[in-house]
Amino acid sequence: MPIVSVSGLSRSFRVAEKAPGLAGTLRHFVRRKVRTVVAVRDLNFTIEAGEMVGFLGPNGAGKTTTLKMLSGLMHPSSGHVEVAGHCPSRREAAFLRQITLVMGQKQQLIWDLPPLDSLRVNAAVYGLDDIEAKRRIGELAEMLQLGEELQRPVRKLSLGQRMKAELLAALLHQPTVLFLDEPTLGLDVNAQAAVRLFLADYNRRHGATVLLTSHYMGDITALCPRVLLIHGGSLFHDGSLEQLSQQLAPRREVRLELAESLPPARFSSYGELESCSGRDVRLLVERERLTAVVGRLLADLPVLDLEVREPPIEDTIGRLFRQGGSDPP
Amino acid sequence: MTSDRSNPRRQAGPAQSRLAKAVRRRAASLRSVLRIARALFSSQYALMLEYRAEIVLWALSGLLPLLMFSLWSNAPAGAASGLSPQAFARYFLAAFVVRQFTIVWVVYAFEEDNLLGRLSPYLLQPLPLVWRYVAAHLADQATRLPIVTIMVALFFLFVPSAIWIPSLGQFLLAIFALQLGFWLNFLLHYAITLLCFWSERARALEKLLYMPYLFLSGLLAPLDLYPASLRAFALHTPFAAMLYLPAQLLSGGPVDLIAGLLNAVSWLFLLVPLNLWLWRAGVRRYAALGA
Figure (tube, each protein chain N blue to C red):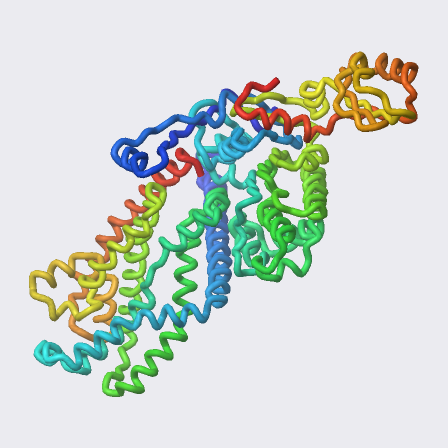
């Protein structure tokens, strides 16, 4: 039985529009023009307990809105959501004890106090006795490689240390469902890697279900065997990254190093010429023709070296995101 | 063979067990509430101590009653009022003390939490938000205690004729009235705070409270000096219960205790359901508009 179940989920907002300038301001004051914006449109998906699912989409695609509806912070306009057997919008205590929502750009730790003070409050709120709270803080701190940082005021911590401490605070009650919205936002490469390792470890130890949004594809490729791609408020893809890559990028990149330079016209029969600079050539070849084309290239041309590459998923999805409001390919 | 139903001893067994379980549940629940209260208070107290310099300034900014004392004690109207300089001094010193322990700034704290994005994580915890602010205010009071004590001692040093020691009963009654005054002030401000769910300018509404508070609470002058009709009106507002009533009780001035307490409790009965309604409607609106 799925732990997250979403059917026909939609959410729209009424947004006031104002033209620039004094005339626009006066018109806005006298008669407001309001437009309805659909942020999420008829989403359907389920997530099984223990799954780690990446939630991808360009800015404004409806990812955060969806996470807020799943965690109960926002009511859906229509549709049905069930998380851990509860309707999130009722915000029942039994539901709140099972979930957490971490937003990379928001914080719950008290800024001027060490994280341990906030953790003590969280432990009391979630009914953990001192021994259990100490045990969990110790375990999570070890996984997150946090030590004396827990005794320093939050304002004195680096961004990475602060994010780790936020994660510790958000997971102290051992939630079974984690909604993570850009948890690695603004972190350097090392800190990103540490957070990824921690999330994978937490998932393994506690069998937690994770729904993760991130603009860093590294987070998704490292953690999520399954991705949901949302585009313009609608679900565009639900499956593995590999399937997504095949769907979005049906061509492979072939890189050649030749013994001598050749005119670009010589490559037109093999595939789309991406670049041709001296003896280095890059071609895009359809997957189903790849073997035959590589054979022909080796037979026809003075090839010193040949490499076949999958176009990076970041580039593929980036191309889709850059298309903005247009329909996905 | 006797059935369980007809045997009172056997019936008493499960009933006692149920009762014992219920008592244990209640005890566990009470322990949990106390743990939360202790953790919230100690973290907020630690936070207040981080701002100790700021708190001294806040306490000094509440010197208005003492300035009013200096004004009244030197003005001809003060002499004509029938109150002795000693009574003026005691009243305004008591008003200063009461004001220090009934100050409420919940609307500022709420706005800050909203702007810094702390509201959403707090709303996802199984703890009503109001208790965080109550703890913060109680911690603020605890932090002010030594500062206020020093200021009272300094006042007595400069105005030794004002020295008085209230009886234990009088003192306890004044503390009770002061707590009632704090809760009234808190609930009134929290109701305004909850309007933040509807308007981002709720702080402006909070400023509207200051004028009636200034005139009707007895901060500028003891209500006994007001014209009879204005005094009667003021005594029916929550503002008189926030300052005049506890200040009169503390300074030993004449006061209609029963009427004052009834007025305070009546306002509490009005404000508690109003706050609950505003909270539920506000959270619904927050979720409807987008957290």
